[in-house]
Image (cartoon, rainbow, N blue to C red):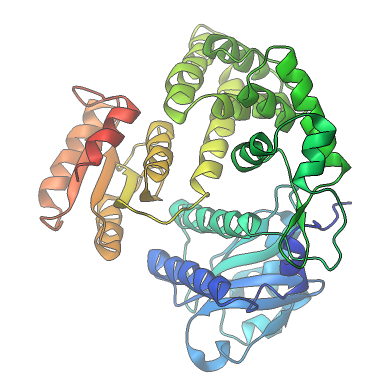
Length: 440
């Protein structure tokens, strides 16, 4: 049985995150507005689960009746299916869906089409829901689902980055005491906490950090690994993965990932992919570890092996990790970039990695995913006032089709369009693209 978290998310589960800080409300309202804008949905909701109720944290839609709602029974909501499955729940026409015939309270709100994505903690505990609603039947696209998933990840990144709630009389050690116990200087401990999340303090009512015995044990473990010759980044990655002992070199990790892809369980593969992206920057992890590993598995498949399943496992592990990185939203300082694969293009990992790199470089990266009609990409870029539209094509036919469509597209003169991918004449490394876009 999964238990509720005991961090700042306790506040969310208790419902107090809804309005207890004006900053929270502004962030939540911004995200629900983005859901409605990107999906052109008349209603979008962010709700926090409180036992058997859903508490309204933010909504976009008509005031009547949505502005009068503060909570809704979970058992009467379509959201229960997404929360129960811990996965997106999609309804094209609720009037024809037998799963929803016993939920008249939601039907009374004229909810016909519904797309809900649960808000999941790192421990896979559902604390709420982000959803889009339409009053007419609607076939939600794969892109629609991806957009809401990405924004749900943004909600969780924001919540989990907030300071833990103050606790009256919080007990534990201050950082000086931890330093004395472990022999690691206080300045170093602060760096480890900020950069690697090694320490996970509680806070007193006055805001002072207090560390427990688990924090001390983690520091002692890291100290011992450093004595054995590991670098702090390597040791922190191993600590996060709890068991992985693969070499830290790009070639060693690449070979270990190829071997782990043979195991359908997938846990070791996920841990190795996470370690690759922890120990190395995104460009190195993609171009020197992930891409060669995928080529190796793909070659084995073409040579007559049964590696198609391995390729799918590896692709999904890499894609999942990149999407997790992209969910860690930050305030943009350079501008807005919309990224999408061209029509018919299904190979998205390179473009997804570029989105992660752009975000780390200070851009608001809006990633739309694979096989996106150019008219949709252009419309979203226009609506968001994007500075750059990045498009990808991997074959000459797809590139020619994309370039033809671009000639007919109505894009502002001020918007830069960048077309890349394997089909372009001079494919650039990811960091070269990022550096080039800094002049935009």
